Length: 394
Ligand SMILES: *Cc1c(COP(=O)(O)O)cnc(C)c1O
Image (cartoon, rainbow, N blue to C red; front, side, top):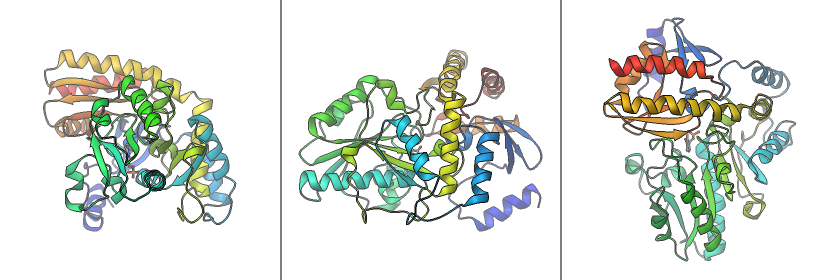
């Protein structure tokens, strides 16, 4: 098949929920992707903040190959050799005590919500407990995750959703305080708002939420699906503020490209027991071998330190563009999770960049998002900025 045929086949078969860019990707190497025409792209999207180790990382690929040859699936009725050790390593880097592996980010949020619901039922003594989430948040597309996603546009056609969800303003502690009452059982927030437009929190906000949760005996649930796994220059974004949530949702970069997520919790919040939750695939040997390799390579190659270092450099380079170009109106972000607010449709710049061999994506309606593989160097940043300048000038 040629490129046109691949695209047509997909358009005729796959449910049309995405407007895709006209690109058929075939392989990757390091931080570069290649399409079926052999055209090379510098990748500053990483499959939406997933491929932290880039593409075809030799040690990661070898670990998956080895597991494929041994065993890919067992179900959770049995132990396997990969899940326990991957969970132990995840606990060690997160400070959490318990792990439940899922197949996606949305499912990690569903699990976190189940912990919150069970906690709420016990704490409030009736099912009319409330959970506080944030406006402009994104937590996934399943019904539970959608219910806590503070974006009416995504929710509109799928009402009624979960009851008892109240929305506060991110980075506005007072707006959270006013929603707390005797029915409140949990506060859910992203460590950095991603899809909503790359909004990092203030330290005051994150530490303030922790304090409110302590004072009112609420579970603090952090969605680290996009901002976790080293992207902010910390393994998990909350580690910057030296606090610990009670429950953490992870996915995206955890599997380095294999579909695996997890919800993690402190022992005190580990209220789910046999019969309360399950997943046929969740934490199968294949994805856990991938996750374990990711965690091993992060430690060995100091991936988080690289994200912090190169992220600082990216910050300076992007910041300069706000002064220089009238259409670039603001810059936000931390580590290798940054955004430029633009006054033209982001797609116009993204399409130009694709022509010039650079992959970037958008967030919200007016933000260019930069979430590259965490292995990038300063030279890659320079290469990206040079292409981006050409696109902004055009
Ligand atoms: C991507 C994302 C999700 C949903 O993850 P899926 O794997 O797409 O279900 C949830 N929360 C945040 C912050 C995300 O970025």
